[in-house]
Length: 165
Image (cartoon, rainbow, N blue to C red; front, side, top):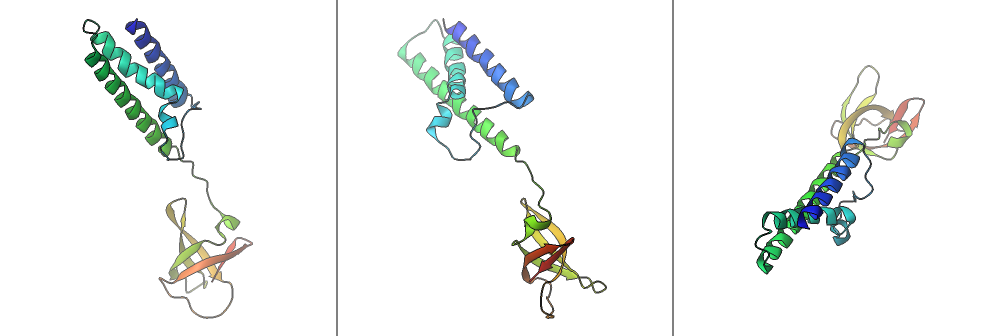
């Protein structure tokens, strides 16, 4: 009995693994980053629990006492938590980076890096998708000089040019 449950759970795990990792089909992973009991008690979580529990019972089929079931329960729970953490970590690696260009950057804060003395444009460092990006911008109003290290905000984007204050 335990062998058939172990084979079923392991086979279903392999199917789930191939669907989610190889083919990218996965409907049972919460990528919000919040830990909830429902994430562990999903069908996938129960399959993971079944792998640990049933294989332990297959190995110790001769000694089917309450202590064997207790250890199997702990091992099944451990396998379930470890595999949930693995799926959670892998889902964090799948973050899709959407390039921010043009009008997407309006309202973002940046820091002046330097000024090009020939064109009058400033090099501005802004954070976009978790990385620093350098853009060129000109003053939107006023003739006061902006010095390196000063914080500015992108006010507008017109004809391929960023306007900063």
